[in-house]
Structure formats: structure tokens, C-alpha cells
Image (cartoon, rainbow, N blue to C red):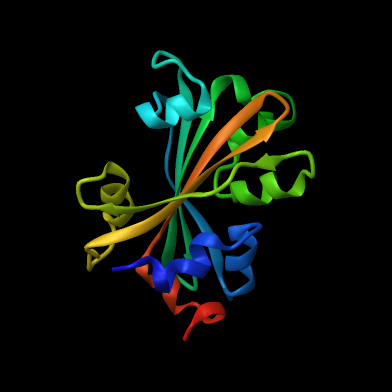
Length: 169
């Protein structure tokens, strides 16, 4: 699987949430994990966290018309959940993207892309509820900053996203 069929989803600018909502009759955020813990080593390094610092680890599935299309994994360092971002720790089934893109002071780093195989922990969590597991999935991640606060968002694109009409061939 090359990134070709996923390219528009991987590289699309702006809010993925907004794009999915515009293509869905029924868009839903379904939380699957919301707990404090330690970020993965690479995540902690990018966020400037020590391995001992806790963060809120939030994972949700984004559903379009009853089908899971994206698995989102977010790392929200405890020190970032203050001030304007205090409410991000209590989103429940509300999309994180909507909150991030509403604030014009929030900046986003360049997107990083990766093909995840079944050896990757995020792959296993992303596809665990799929009846048919793909050999691999494509993911992207970036860091959002507001002042001195930063959070990381990783979006894993599930095969069903290709059926949405915006980029159907």
C-alpha cells in the first residue's frame, strides 16, 4: 500500500474534523481512551517532556455515517492543560480539532507522515475494532502550540476514509 490513495487525506491543510463533517451525514467522536500516563519516547522528545512527566493520553475514533474513518491519538502534557487550553482535558465526545482551529493564536508544526504496520502499537489500537485488518495504515502527526503550551495529535487513517466522496476516484 503506497500513500497515493491517502495522499489528499494525509496532506490536506486545515481541520480534518471540519473536512469529515462536511462529507458526513452523521459525524461522531467516540472516545476509546482518556487517561493520564507517559507519552511514548519519541512523543515525549518532540514535546520536550521528561520520561517522568505525565500527560493526558486521549484516543478517539472519528466516525462518518456509522463507520470508523480515523483513529486520533493525542498527547496533552499536564502543564499544557491550563489557561485557554484548560477545557481540552474535558472534551468527552467533542472533537479536539474544532477547539484547536477556532483559536487564531494556535500554530501548527509541519505534518509528519508514517506508514504503520502491525508491529506498531498505534496500528494495533487503531484497527482493533475492524472486522478486516489492513496490512498497514497511514498516519500523520503534528504539534499544536499556544504560547508556551504544546500538544501532539496523531491521526491514523482507516480504510473506510477512502470511501468518502471528496476524494473518491
